[in-house]
Length: 95
Image 1 (spheres, rainbow, N blue to C red):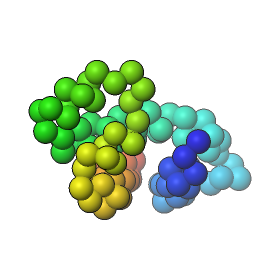
Image 2 (cartoon, helix red, strand yellow; image 1 turned 45 degrees about the vertical axis):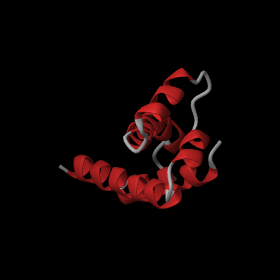
Image 3 (spheres, one colour; image 1 turned 180 degrees about the vertical axis):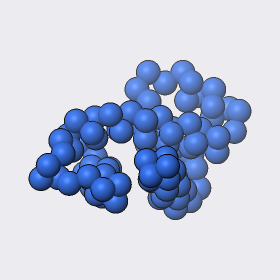
Image 4 (tube, rainbow, N blue to C red; image 1 turned 60 degrees about the vertical axis):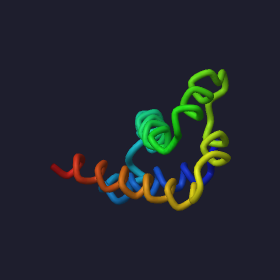
């Protein structure tokens, strides 16, 4: 379990108006997590060159460590992707 991602999802749900005392956060996060993970993976993938994309495509156990090793400024880019995703989620939720 990624503790930072759990906190991020909790914070996002609170910002969307959910109440941890009333709403089932675990169920809500189970719905959100694969969407967030896919968004992060697809957007990090765009930073890879063709050789790296080929390497990644062949991996059996895909995880963020591959991107961390290949992308300069990884932490800043990952943080930015989380922020962008959260803004989109909140905008879609509030529309």
